[in-house]
Image (cartoon, rainbow, N blue to C red):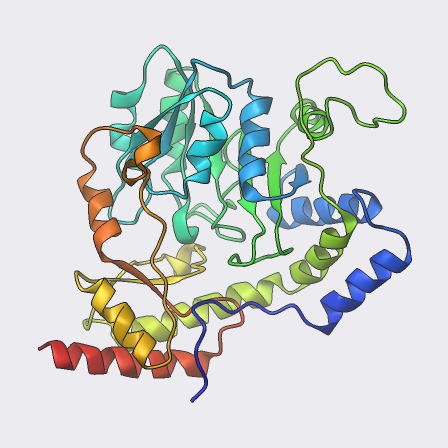
Length: 361
């Protein structure tokens, strides 16, 4: 029986043709296809500006740099996130202060104020698995303390909150990942969204060593870096973006298929698909997650653990207790997912999981 991969996303003949055409037309570095891709992303997200970068980590780095994050500053981050959210800040010399999460894996906004000091520069809510953080409350807190908000929407492209707003378009900046294990992929890639021309121009300058055109300009007046994208990946992205509504629909259908099979059988993370959230992964919760993973593996079914909470990354030096995060670290398991995962596979996975549950009785 064919092995079921834990993640399935496809790049087919149309993407191959787009790459071939880009190369044939000498659209290789960051150029007109990248610009077209950025405009298409901005149009889809209903935001004025989007800036493409090599990956989600650099999207966060670019946004942090645009806000002037520096040594000695502090950043408040959800404890449940990929370590890149913290690394991007710490490499700039900032200190990370983390906040525990709620049952839906998003930052507990009621704990944020306890972490604010006179060194706090910004708050970074993380929309894990397409689930919306409470942005209105977070923005209210940020305004009260004169803080900036950057959304880590790396797992939330195409996902909306209950007010119909795309996640990653609500704060000062929004950051997305276009990695392989995302709904929209360019292999590697990232996006930063912005709301005004001044921020957009600053992002573009920081992306390109401080200037818009290194061949025409002589004044490198700000500290910047090379975060440039390229037209080959942008060509893939344009094709993928044409399929995004189909990907969103399929991801919701996959979630519903799992939900219907596993309801009242095993705990899983709820996603509010009726109000616009888009789950990119189906995540179950069990104290026997390691045992379940081995069982699925023996049946030819891949699964995956989720990334550890930040307080579990010893090199970050985070202290304190994070009881809700601990539950996620100890119990999460990702079942086969992805915008091109065959729905027939879900039935097979569900049947095997039912079998495992029966054996556990």
